[in-house]
Length: 155
Image (cartoon, rainbow, N blue to C red; front, side):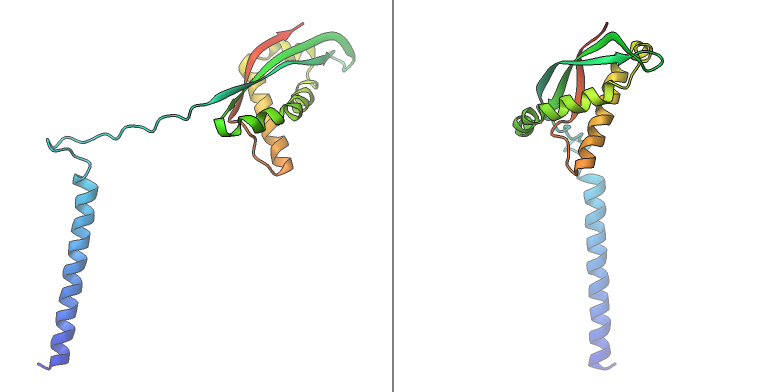
């Protein structure tokens, strides 16, 4: 056998051994690294939830419509609370006038009957949808994680 053939065979054997060792190490890491010294599986602690701050938008007043679209003397008063990451709190406070405008626009289309039939969760969902659409139209992300309802009065 020539030296070249012997070198090629030896190279192939070394590559196969290295591949097998790498595969064995990968299998060991995936199957045994998550087990403690006693052989029981170690459960990783969940990451802590981020600490949110809450920014309030008080007294959003909206005149409601009658069943035929006419103006009536009924209104909806909403206090909205925005769940904000601490680093976006200042930005959220700066956006409060925009957030008020979007809320009034979204809620003013409802009639007295439709508004009375909505739950607090329904109002929050409608507002969150309106905020997402408004920020998407501007090409930005909302400075808050979620809009919550602090108070809802329909008179």
